Length: 332
Image (tube, rainbow, N blue to C red; front, side):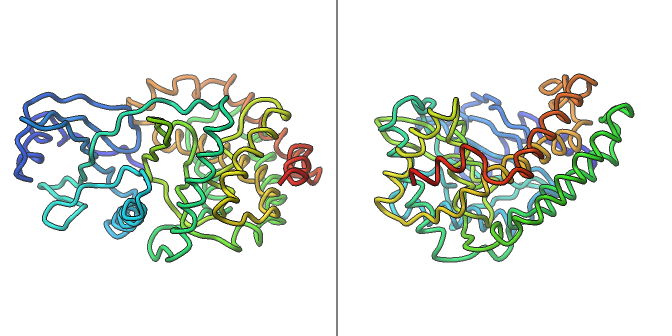
């Protein structure tokens, strides 16, 4: 995959794009952390700063971006705190020369206090509301979370690339072949009872302010099972995860039923995420931002540890329900 061409994105072109909307930037321009797209905080004269997001070419089509926007605008209309794009002349996807971009209000906040069970209960309640709204319609253009994309295609891209050392290539091929065979038993569960989900609902995409969660970055929104937006909220030893899950379910089930059979998908989803992340970095490796942030991924040490982690996940998939899954099912 060729590197993204953000060469046309200079301070002048960024400010020109914002001025083309009838806004008056005051030249305060701060680049924010983002790898897929380019995101900036831009000062506006006599007003609050805005966030401008310039989209990577060839990742999402216009239709797919607009479906993400429509989803977040639906959620916002139901008074859920999500950071939705600002519509300008009834448009949320904006164009300036060859640039595609959107603008968003700035949302303050801090990382959620994950050791606070009341926080997790609140998160569960809000995610249930997201899912209830997500269930009302379907995505026509955005993809589903699938074994093909996150498993087969991701592993193939690693093996066809130059980032994985030759010494690790056969070990990686062997373990991913076995994993992909094991994942087939979960195909039906992954594709049934799906809905529109956030897709990347980890704590880094939730801002906490005034005892409320504010959900950001729906860039990975797709069709998937409800558990996709819940399992990444768990962390720490098994006993802590059980307490966390109970708190999440108290909030979630206050507003929406949860199908406990989806718990079997936690380890498959964790495995797919591991494979997909390494592939994502491999595909983007020609970009300097990725080389700076993930310099360790080019080493033999990383790949040997990655293959070991995949083998551990293969063991989880082969052994049937894990101890964590069994206990979560018991308390759900």
